[in-house]
Length: 259
Ligand code: KIV
Image (tube, rainbow, N blue to C red; front, side, top):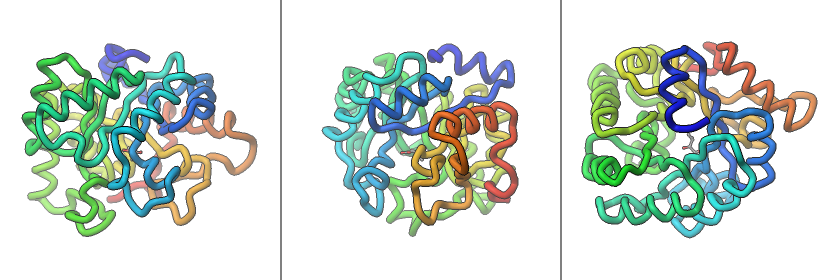
């Protein structure tokens, strides 16, 4: 997949598939199975480093893992996360985004809405492709009081919808929607022209992402929105089953969504 395909997928109603990877071997398997996007997520703080949250991940680690994934993938679009405190000024955002692009990312992702306007604008000006991340923002877990579903009341739902429209205006190519009610994700997905990629955001997003360790059943006490696709078979068949389930709208079901 390349960046211009994102828009084509949305227009044609083809669901976008995305899994996280942190190393070359997994990236190669996901890529060979035909995944559309590989996200080098800062979830590596949880699943690789064994930390409670993503706040301890830094640029050096993101560059290392982005390089490793880029070595294993050929076809998938590579999106790398900007870690905590790596985008707290426009200049710093540009500098760190460039480092991730140099390491092999084709797009960068960071969390937040209108409060990040300067960061979105500087990347747009410098033609660095951006993926937004709204709803539950793991880097704000302390401020948000834990890993909680966001946008449950009218005011916070409106803020997420307004932010999604603002991000689109600031040139963002796609937006991850994490842990929001399915109905809100559906409204956002129909009201913006860029694709949404959901995680715990219901079936009506334009695509779905899972942390690969969750999809493979490695994570213990996984959240409600997770499905273990490795119930029998191997990593390749689990990956193909995930891709097939998303493409045919069989995943997520109501069981994996918040109403
Ligand atoms: O870091 C990550 O894995 C993510 C996903 C939860 C979308 O941002």
